[in-house]
Amino acid sequence: MMNSNPPLFQQYELLLQSTAHLQPLHNGYQPTSSVLEECQLPLVDLKGLESGKEKERMACSREIFEASAEWGFFQVINHGIRSELLSRMSKEQMKLFAVPFENKSTSGILDNSYRWGAATATQPNQFSWSEAFHIPLTKVSEADCYGDFIHLREVMEELATAMSKLARSLAGVLVESLGHRKEVFEDMCDESTCFLRLNHYPICPFPGEVTGLVPHTDSDYLTILHQDAGGGLELMKGSQWVAVKPIPEALVVNIGDLLQAWSNDTYKSVKHRVVTNSVRERYSTAYFLCPSNHSGIGSCRQPSPYRHFTFGEYRKQVRDDVEKTGYKVGLSRFRL
Image 1: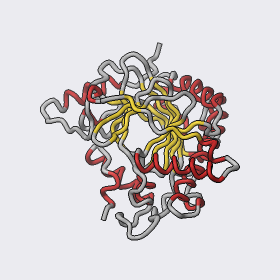
Image 2: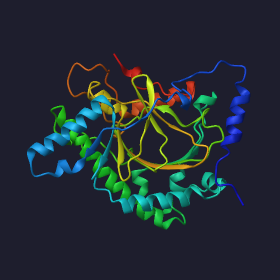
Image 3: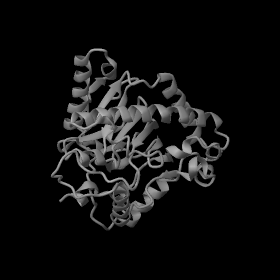
Image 4: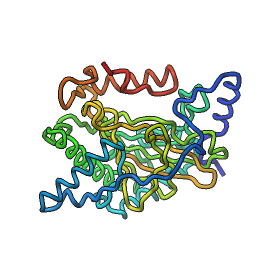
């Protein structure tokens, strides 16, 4: 029987052998034993946004604002995405990742977006023990991308539409909270740069040494994540990693770099990671709300702590940094 998992062990072992003589670069990584506690993220009930009472709508908007400013992360319930749809997505995702590794890596399925490990890693702590598909929204509805996975296409189309609607709604609340019209990001967001990412974190034989996804911030406006009950997501609170406790049927929302820049650091794009597990595998699905490449990120008010830049410039700088150093530098490159 052909193995469905990529050769993570072999690649990681090569990195260990090739860097045995070097001092380790920590890049924000600490062993999972250093995590103090499992935290309860702010939980926002989004039915308040649909209330006929202005006071309830304002209270819900305030909760979203405060969570984004203090934590950069929060969880939402009554978000409008059916649990049945999320369950179908999880089942189809498991089928997809169960395909033999050679097929996933060479068949071109899902716009040839398959990736695993970390091609640019030069140190063991830059390696991600995971595999993923990274699909632009413009490709989600193209039948040619799916091969034999007909049902996956149906589910992904429905989920992409639902997550896009939710992301734009939340972005609108955050924009209005800083005194701007909610359509600000509507005018800039582009389906060619927004995308879905399907993640699989296989069982790892040494979970205290390597992460499933290395510490990073997201290079977008806003991310919406559906994770399974296994947990594994951790975020940096102050100078300490804290584990995010999964809540059934809740979605995780986090602020991206672009929204932090636009808000003049009012909202926080927080470093986060996924830890590995030695007894169970983990799956998640993420939606990333992004502007078009030529869109200037701008600022909610002047003066801004950042120089003017477009999303295309930001993506290129992140890509260049990762290729040269193995890790993302991020917004500090653009700070005045």
